[in-house]
Image (cartoon, rainbow, N blue to C red; front, side, top):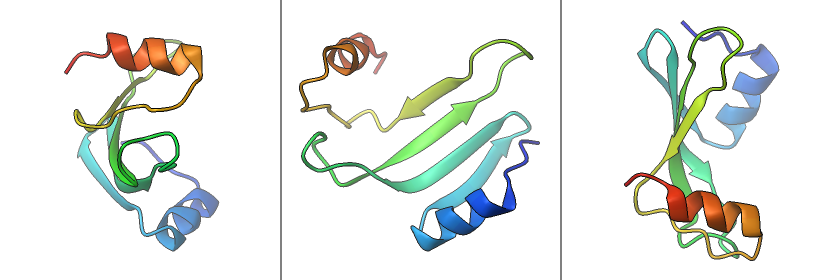
Length: 83
């Protein structure tokens, strides 16, 4: 189970982000705000999967979330995303 710090949980609650745990090494954040100047919708869901210690986490967003900004790294990441 992924343990979140109390301060983070309070902030998520203030932002009306719902927290779910679909698995022992996963956390699902629902209704995460997205900057409408940079994305095609104002909210998305965010799935974070934790791998082995020392390995990076895997992060997923809604398949229909599109990046509309000018950051070349984010453009590349969203273009290469598996849908």
